[in-house]
Length: 311
Image 1 (cartoon, rainbow, N blue to C red):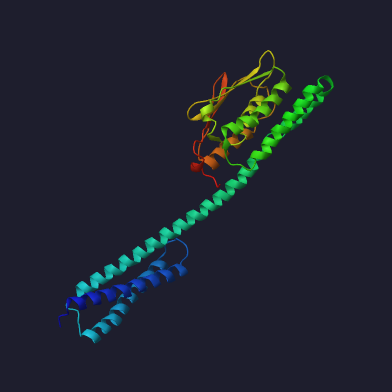
Image 2 (cartoon, rainbow, N blue to C red):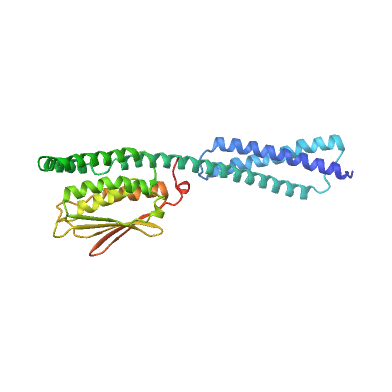
């Protein structure tokens, strides 16, 4: 018996929708039973067995329903079998592709959450690595100048207070403006110059038009602290530190006159800055060293919204 186009269309739709939900249920049960991504014969046998069950089950049930209501029989069973088998396989792989896509997306989201949590924890640790010896050295300097220059001692205490207040103000910030960093740095530089009395020269030529861009907090202070820690400072051979900028970088440069240190440097300060730039801005700093100079180039972060941070 020949069926009308409407009947054929409704029959095809009935087969398709039944196959679709059957394969969907198979995928659900399949992933309940096999929750990892490891391929094995057991998984393959499970899928093949149930695809065959779905094919013959739907063909038997829906075929009988169609025959009962319309009296239709299949004039070309071979073509119907091939097309049905291909359709079932297509549905299975489509569902499987959607499942793995969603699984991968959720896995990536969880991975990013874990990385962010780890990054925040690591950042908190790194923030606390501003050299604690600076306070000790500053107090030693203060003890020295109080008897001889009490007025200078008062100014020194005020600037020391400003310096540590600045550290407290930015400790919870991911990024700050270059202007804020330089303001905080000014007190630190005053303390160094007072402590070393002409043995350090620091020149800041940062251009005004880039001061509203962003930088990692305390990065300039750490670089200057490193330069002081690792180089000889004397009136005969003053340590010269330059802070300037290009369009893309803040640059800290010092003349190289290494101390004869009896211990290996941990390089924790530079590692601090590298890690923070990588974690927060997905940027890399550049370190250049030759026989006479040591240069660190810090990327200028021009758009805070593009940095990899939680606001």
